[in-house]
Length: 363
Image 1 (cartoon, rainbow, N blue to C red):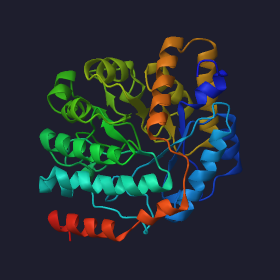
Image 2: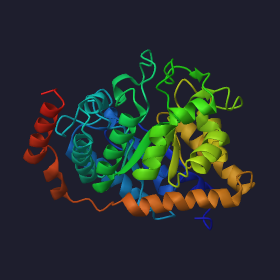
Image 3: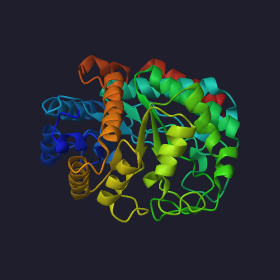
Image 4: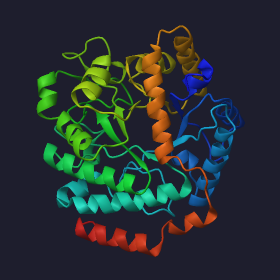
């Protein structure tokens, strides 16, 4: 990747959201030019399994015509429960809390395998799940039943099972929201949440599920939260902080996969493009910008400038690019075939869902 133009190398560090169930011409153009390395899908992009597969195939065709000839990462937030983006023809499951309350990690793994099979069938290769935040503050509405529970042991066990299930079916898992935001309010979608937790506090509780996953069932990716831990890094939120990204996530926890920011278009962040550059400089691999096309383009330009001017150390950028390349080699399979859709909502998956709902008391 280091032999490519800075703009193309920068594009690999951007994952973009967009409007509509068809790929906008401007998006296709940017993908073909190498200005985007991945996309994220929301309900606004998904009308049915067949339409989703067609949309992704169109985007992958453009990506393979780009200077890198590299496929796109195609991500989605399919946790289950209220964080579900898929249309009704897919097999979907309840929120994480039900699995945590059951105490049966095999159920979480089976549900993740079904989800992974159906995501992979339409071409989604990255799921922003599981959430491994510990719900230690009942007022933390942004997490709520998205957490497996209040116990680090339960959250770690269930999260590892879910990550394993997804990755067994060819979909990269992304543990979130590092370093853990279940103690926080308000919602980072609205404003930047702050915490008075110390590093010792995090080590004793919030970091434990991440440590468990990284050592026992390594997720391909970790999403870093927009959260301000003033007693740990008073200069930047976790998503823009080398303390969290380099010293803690990679250094202390030994994570070797992809570090991706939470959506930089959230209310917690003032300037998405500037924050994207700061996140990459701080040690993130991918900046996630879910809405603004202008911010996505500005972020790519800013990162390209940092590569060109060597403000982003070449060895750091090369290592990050290599991690992204390896992830794509492991999980991106752009050769979609129509018969792959036969698994969507199939009888075996419906029966698995019924059995799981009965087991967790939500039949």
